[in-house]
Image: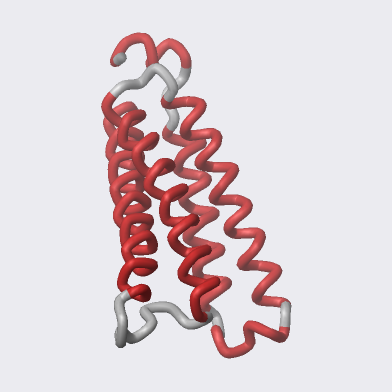
Length: 135
């Protein structure tokens, strides 16, 4: 279980950090004169995406640190599971809202992926005795 948890934390951490860096970079791409907007919504969308990108980089970095050093891995896993449940809840509510009709089944698919990630973080997290063994 310890190796599976470390792999999960490492992969998810790297994906979050890379996605966050991409969102952060989209702000600077948008600021170049004559550039095409990478995101719809104008300057406010890019400002918000860059802010969210910074948070994703921090979250990803914390998970990467938890994959390497296990002192806080249970807490990071629990916090990540909670975040994934909230992301899934948002998508389930968006699927029922008519404003997101154009997205089709995507909110339901994303909700399922986020709930699976939350379950993995809770199910694979090491117990207290295991944490002391491999830290």
